[in-house]
Image (cartoon, rainbow, N blue to C red; front, side, top):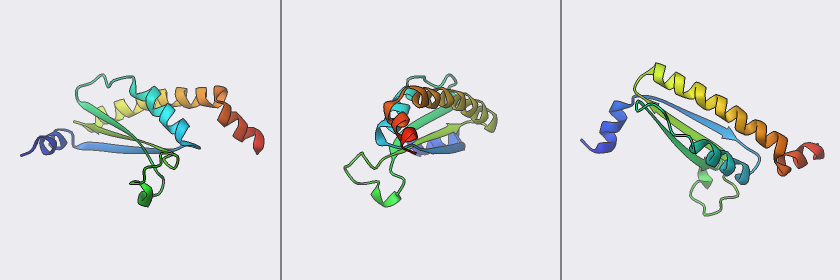
Length: 113
């Protein structure tokens, strides 16, 4: 059995959260802000990616179209998954709140409406 198969068997509970954002810069900034904090439990694994909202565009070299922050959680139990995702949602709320209050592009889009 390969190491990845063993790893998946050890972490059977999974959840992927896809968060569309207005631009690649905001999605990348959110990912960088969130990935700084490591998972506290050895029973939880978390993976980040910035992807395109269109699956056909995933293999293009341009990052500008990649505006979806995708976070995948894997955990040993549903309880561990729930606890980890609750903490992530709190952190995500802070990051999005800061973007809304301070980011120039977000403020510009709001004033254009």
